[in-house]
Image (tube, rainbow, N blue to C red; front, side, top):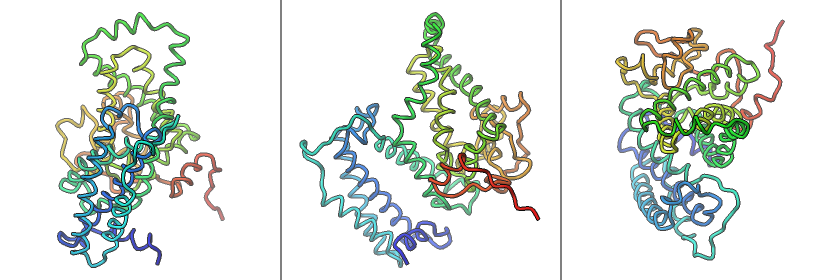
Length: 380
């Protein structure tokens, strides 16, 4: 049995097979700490390649050094605890090996630092996973919609890889996001409108961005469902069969570029204050994870006004009544206005995924899926 074949079942052990005190939680924490330490070391050696310029004021060399020391200390402690408690010690030994390797390599001297003209947002990925993981994992554990679903549910590695790729490609995605808006403003003089919009109060601007972007995204999202060629891209996102905070990261790169590009048009052509745009980005980033999460809160008081996990879970349902519904990301009133609203009283979907279509597993196969010929069902 290979190393991966031994490691994977340990990560995906069902809850009843990993009670408190079994060493599973400390082993998983140690492995996460060791991988984070390795990533931090890569950022410190190659800051020009793996650092996001927008995070330069936060991800300084001193802060990274301090964070690395804390992560290594936690990793050592968790790994030793897991080795003491666990019967199958593969999680603890794997984490300890990685932590010792990182410690032996050490941090770079000034002369070892390598710069690069392009960058990949590894620091962006680490901050997101650490922050959102610490936020959503406890909520999903203590307030689950599906109490049988584990943290390391089936295909979590695949969705984590999607998260990694989208974070690493942040420079390319930022360029593609700005492209439609730059094209419009290069041909149309929007200065008068931009001056008026910029002068609006901050709160008014933020609400306007939320409304305009959700309206655009509703129709782009609906178009991806209605046009067969575009659906092939969007089917990758719907192929997730177990929803949690990480599931929303499974999106085809082409869909991300199209969706972000069109959604950003109102923000960057109408002249909104950059502070309001940044506030919107923070809200939508949190919100997209929230509506995909495995959190079973009863939010009936607000779910007709704001999108909730139950609202968006129905969009991902694989049952007949869940097909082509609930396209809005923030405001369900758009679905009520355009006839796509569906919220059965007190119920959640029983299953998720793509109904009637086979989407392959694996990042590479899913990336190629929209470009391959659709297989017709066998006939006698």
